[in-house]
Image (tube, rainbow, N blue to C red; front, side, top):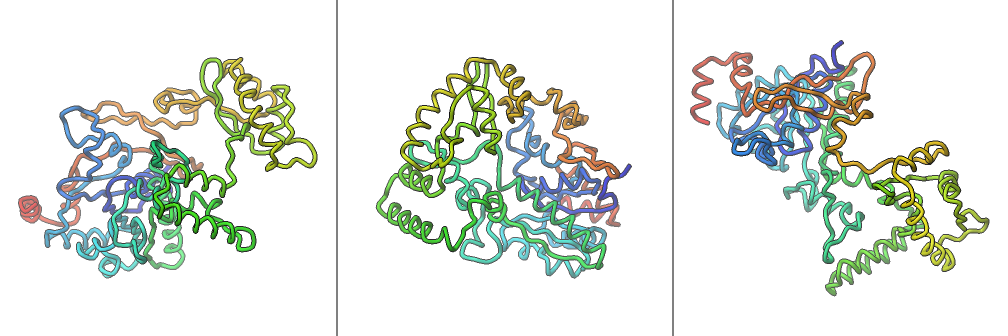
Length: 422
């Protein structure tokens, strides 16, 4: 059976993470995705290289660009506009990520592209949007984490300096999901109306969207407190206050507490286990397993009283000592019986051969002539009538350039001249 986007052609002017991730997900859905790179290639090709001494085989690049055809075009070469025009006329979607001023300079902006094909869906990702005082600035995930509040909210500080979330590029990957989601919606709209459109996504919007609970503000209950905090924050910054002190004030505002015994990780006898009890019922089950009395289950419990704080101070080491008495497996068996959500802390490198991963078809094997058999994360969702699939590894730099140009009707001389000028 074919994927849900079979017959859809996407041209992708992209680099690094967000837009390439969007393209790879759409490729998993059956779309033909043509990744267009400058002659020097996507910079991500040269990061975390898999083969020592051989460039262009970056680990992250291969993970983010599977299933695509690859071609190189120098958009500064006047001849490239003929190629872009022909590609647009036979395509359904264009994906592009860059600073706001770049597309117009290279003649791949929406106003130019829709002249070639008004039904084309144009998905444009920038860091901060196309208006506002920061719109002209370049940006990457690290800066999005900083500017959006993600970094400060993480409360991870080294020598007084907030640290990035390093395990994953939160803003980039969330943006990729948003791009793929919006493109599918725009294709559905075009199916009903025949109209193409422009989609705008930003790293800033994505980073804020995953913090919507924290961003939420009630004018009645939050405005005065937040206004006080912003004034205090301004004063502390002007006086050169350490970020440790600033973050301490921030945590007071967000009502965070170190005394969350029921949603955290614990050291067991042979490893680390995570426990996630997000309701009173589940928290009571966890406490009962340990035969611990917690005053939070009493009537008239006040979470902000001095009594509560002192009690919780003692409860922290008690739970920690009790959790160390059994192995991770022992605890998992106990928690499953009583219905407490829990799981072991794994490293991602352990999961390639994990039975839970394999039995849910989350590992895909792809053969590559140089890299051999590649194992990759499979599609992130399943569809019963239009199954997703991973059909090929990421392309070598310019691997399909000649093939695509010939399919567009360009002759050998044009292709040769283009290659020579590049």
